[in-house]
Length: 374
Image (cartoon, rainbow, N blue to C red; front, side, top):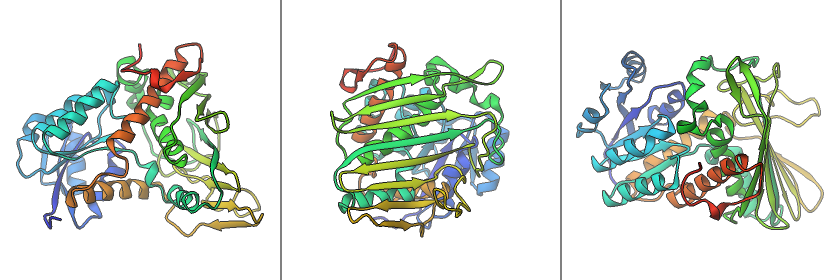
């Protein structure tokens, strides 16, 4: 284990970078040394806020800086392969935002570059580090609800929440483009989170096929989101998962981040777990006999209800904990919790969902995905 303070370069200083920065700002083992963005003024503002020592517009020049140990890539998905390979070849460890790539071959090229240059490569997916989800995993691993049979995830969103980040709609436009996000801002981009936790709750039991349906929700003229949507994840004839995503014009959602929130139900052979909230604050203050305050609730084989809300439920902590995992991985020469093999499997599920949408909602075997989707 090294005592060196790791110096990070954050590439891409859009809205989400504020959450990625927290893990470094609160760490004794790493710091934000430099930032890089084509929008130099924005990079300068973020750099000043985070007390970074360097601000770059030229990514190649930034990689020449020998002080930089690791690179955090927060750019559109289609740029990940090129930026990751360059960082690996420069001897830098890499954390890249989900989804990691647009095709399996791109992902494989990134993995090979990291292995060839003996650097760590992590796909940043923070939902696995949300403390209520981790607590639910403890219950599952301890056999409290028996073998998991179904996992159902519900997501609500709105273009006009009661409170959330102020994000110009224009910044979402790249997510509506074919070559950058398959025109699926919900199902392909945000979907990586949901596929990841459903995979996690089934404890590695492979999702064999998926079936997807989507509608359209026009936020403003010309900007259409891929909701409502329903995804079915098939593990076996007895085990399945679902993700139901919807949007309402004036849903009363409160959030410190994006205008959405989640609810997860996990049913085992001997009990059920409910997890209230994640991205938003919908369940804060809910003590009126309804679904309860943010946390984990479960009923076991004895028929008695239990609850654990004594944890950090704010979404930001999932980012902090994911970053801590990467720092630990580098300093102790270990593997990240979401290793590249698992991340590749989740990307394959993501691509199978795209194919289902484009195949008249057919059931698509995950193994049938060999690279990208036409």
